[in-house]
Length: 352
Image 1 (cartoon, helix red, strand yellow):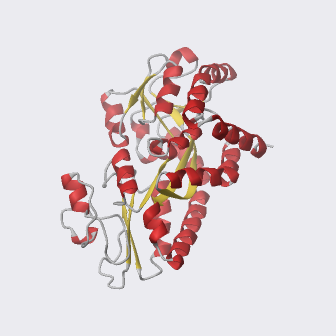
Image 2: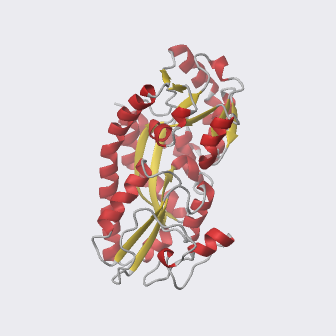
Image 3: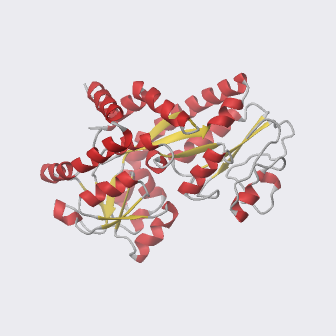
């Protein structure tokens, strides 16, 4: 998005696959494009800055909660329009990020695990079980390490505006996982993130990369046996209907970032830029208040809907840790010892 109607053509992106920047027209003016979620009054003639925001998940997730609050706050300024597209309307995980980097999408909420191909250093958060608890993770995500990571994002053309977590990612399965041998051959859906694939391979499972929108049908049809996500996503995507067990592996923090195209952001006048920063900070703070409440409620919900929660014993956790050491080594090679050591240092400080 640029000042005064310099918007990309959603019709071209969705129907032709081209990545273009249109000199006229908006999503609301294109009849062939799905209407954005909760779009408000499309005839606001005072609009000068029209933003496009995309996420690949439903509206009952923290991703959408961030955008919903951003819309509420930003549109208090009548010059601003904030159009939200959910459920992968603007493409799957990769297409959405490509659109952001190209400048065809202005804002995205997505998990760190999904952007490793665009910001390789984000892979440092894929170090399995690096955070002993959620509280420690949040301190690190808000501390000096956040400044370090912000620079990595900007080098990749992306502005990091804030981070929210949904607790840890957990394994769901139709098979009870109680020993390391129970993971052998388990066909588990993962993202295309190479570190996640390496992790489950090291544990003896059979990781199967799959776009998020295909996971439910994959579980129903038996194409995959298992998947891994936080409680928030297990409920919002009804995985409890197709899975019997949640195994609380707590293997990776599920960090959701609010990001923007950096050129779009930097081109804004100082007053609008400051307003975007303020609204982003408030949206992140507001959404964080929902996180713990969500985890508690949705953990109870899956149990009420027939799932059994399994907590790994010390023997299983020790076996997982031992096998995952190879993943630590590969992440060091990919992002550098300095970044890994900095994260471990910040975790050590935050956990005391």
